[in-house]
Structures are given as C-alpha cells and as structure tokens.
Image (cartoon, rainbow over all chains, first blue to last red; front, side):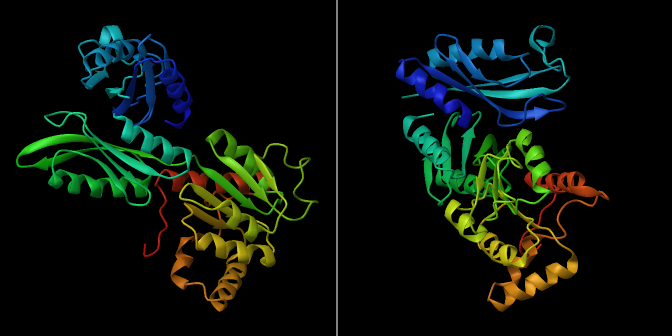
Length: 104
Length: 249
C-alpha cells in the first residue's frame, strides 16, 4: 500500500476515479502473497500487481465497472475457474481478488 | 473505501504506525470496514456491535502476527467472509557494532526489503569504505542512537559489537522497546554475564526470554559471511512467524 500512495495522490489531484484491488485469498502456488495490491484509475492506468501479469487485464476491466457502479466485487481466478483458458493462472494456483472504489 | 478511513490509513502508514483493516467481502454488509490503529482506536462499522466486537479480536490478533488473513465470522447462522489486512511499517534492521559480520549482514538484508542502519561510535569500524551499502551509518553511542531513532514493531535489532560497554546498554534499550527481534552475538557464558549485569541495573528478568542468543539459526556456520547468513535466516523465520519468542513462551 505504501508504494501505491504517491500514485493514488497523483490520480486524486488529476481528478480521476480510483479503484483498489487486493488479493484476499491465495491457494497453491499463487505468484503474489495475500494482501498484494493494485490500483486502477478511471482512465485504465494501473500500478502495483495482483499476479505475475496473468490476471491484471481482467482485474482492470472489472475495476472500471466497479468505479461506475460503486459496488465492490469479489473475483475468483485460477485453474478451477471456467475462464481458465482465458485468464487462468499459469502457475496452477488460484486467487480471490476484492475490487473496491475509493470514494473521495 | 471512504475518505475518512483512507486518510486514517494513509496517516498511519506515513507515520510508521502499524494498523489493521477488516473488510466484509460478501453479503448484506459487503464493503463495510473496521480499522484498528496502533493506539487501539477503532474507526468504521461493520453493521452491528456484535460483529464489530468479534472482528476486533481478529484485528488485534493479525496485527500482532503482522500478517493478513481471510476469516469467516459466524453470527446467527450466517457466515460472513471478512478480509483482515495488516499494514506494518517497512522493516528496519538495526545493527549495533560495525564489525566484520555486519558487512555481509547488510548485503543480505537489503534485497529482503530491510532498511539497514549500522550504529557504532568507532570511526575505524563505521565508515563508508567498509559500509558503502548501508542505508544509514551512525557514529554515535549505540544506546543513545537507538533511543533517538526509536524502535518500533517492525524493527529488528542485532547487537554484534562483542564489547559489553556498547552491548549491555544497547540490549537494555532493545528490551524496553517493542522490537520484533532482538539477537545478540556471543557465547552462552558471555551472555550469562550480560544478563547478570542487566539484572543488577534492574531490568525485568522476564524480558530476557525475548533475546535470541546465541544469535542465528544453527547451520554450522564458519566465518563472517556464513554467520551473517544464519542471522538473516533467523530474522526471516521470526518475520514469517516460523520462530516465535515472546515473554511466557
């Protein structure tokens, strides 16, 4: 979180909406530990990471929606997921990601 | 997350204060939060005093362990998943005694994310030729420097000077702080002597259980680089809650 504060501050100054994604559950060989975070701006920029790059694209899509609706979302990714072929984790682990908007 | 909570979180992080944040992940209270600050202040609301109280205990527990966790709260036959996140200050490694072992210890600590501080009043030991890689090199009486810098829950203290006039007062300061780790170099016999000195000046004996001595994991190390490796390995084990030494354990 500490590393993301300057980015959040910058986007806030620029008047952008911001969403925060956090790994809230990790099974197997998930590439990033519990609590790992990524911030996404309403213009689709992001900082931080919640995987080794395999699910970031999907999380950004969801984050843009969460910023529109204002309703947080809990997402599941992993090999057991139906979407495995599209956005599964190559490492064989699975993660749960919580996405929420930061409201100013 | 609303502005009030975000600002409180940000202030805590910027002031090197540990805090823990609970978030409801699904159900009718989705997105509700409860923030526990280092001084015990609670901000936010999870919907009822009953759930707040239950979660508060988990916040305290995870704050103590300095690790996040997802928990399930059972109230009136409904199960609610809650994520308890923890925001500890970035770890600092405080090394008392700019001795030979301290050089590889700084080398190992840096890629593991430690901010490294080497303290030794002797210029012949503590200089940039020997420690070009330390984040801070402090030429000061160790106990004074430690008290001035402040030792918090994310500070790991290693005392290596092998000189009781530095080590005993440094150990005393460390024992009276919430340091995450306290390790000190020296044989069992040397250590017994140090403890006797501390006892004589009135340091509570119960605190002695916090000290890792002999310092480092037993890897059969030979030489400075290997000893430094056993120390950093022990520190990592403590950081990851694999090795726990607290009063009463």
